[in-house]
Image (cartoon, rainbow, N blue to C red):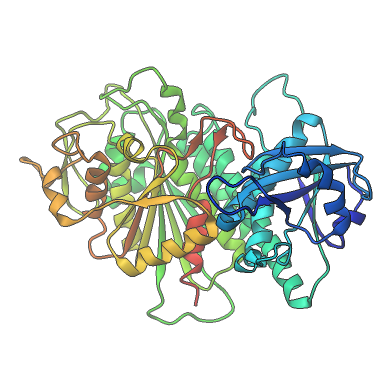
Length: 515
């Protein structure tokens, strides 16, 4: 989709459809909705006044009201999109509103539309002053670009309903504000492209996206973006003594891939004590559960078990373009988890790269094994701060559902940076404990640790405690994205399929360390 930014009064912009956001400014729980448009254009307000006064449109998030031939506007249609209550308005609602505009245009066969940029003085209480222009512009582009794609990639009768052109129309204003809108717009293009790149990887079936193919696509992205990249396989795992990673891979005819992507800033030398950030992703391109095989029902979704790896590859794509002043190393550990005659078994003991021995209790707890070697390897590459993402545990989905992903951290300053990143990303993570009093859950009689807890309770925490054994004192964030990596339901602002969660938050976390 071609995305453009223009500065003029939205009323005078000729387009098949102009989308304008509306909020409910009424106070009180039981108060009747009182709607206000986020524009100071009198012509737009007048065109919508009668329809809004009818009371049929409540302004709830994602609600839509389409007016044909709006009087006084050059637009052929006026689409009013609800963002909910003004008092709780954030950039995330704006992101969803932009997505709703795109999703509304697609089934109508509309190839182009415009979105009116929310004006900070549109509300009498000036609530929008708390929402930075950079964030608003970025959110509009992100929401629109993420909403445009439908994941019907392999349908032979696929219908082209793509929106080909989006114009963000912002009222002319002082130069400083214009510059901020431009900055947010440009960042939105970069970040949404990275998230869609991630989503495209997650969407691929396991017979297409093998570990080898994932390595090829990562290498091609790195070559395009100017990143250093190395892709290794079985011999390198043996050389590095990655016994945990290799154990998972040995049951498949497809060889594993160890992908290392490196971004180094240019322009000025970094201090010797500058942080080096390690982004580690679980890349299980298909997970049968191995010998501890999964039930057949729902197993087809296990192609998305590499969503953590895809998030890291997508984040590296954006980092290469945003150019933060901090070194970043991405490590992806990719394999298939299959149950053939060579597969590792419950009761086996394997030795990780760090030297720790692991008793295998369940071969379906494979993600933490590949991450164990990936996290340790990142440390050997000089990483001083680590973040990993993985569709790691069903237990996290049981605990948090599909609205929040799990977050674990061993260092307060590090997690504070992630909280700040979430304010920009709009993604939802909920922190769970991984304190040392949980260590007993993974103690093994025969080896150093077990790869699952001794009981079913606190399974997401047991997995986090396992990973914690391999990061030591290194500041570390663990993201368990199992419940949020795939959208099972169509929403007004996004289609069914891969979500690309964690990409935006990881990017902002990295930028927080920029010198």
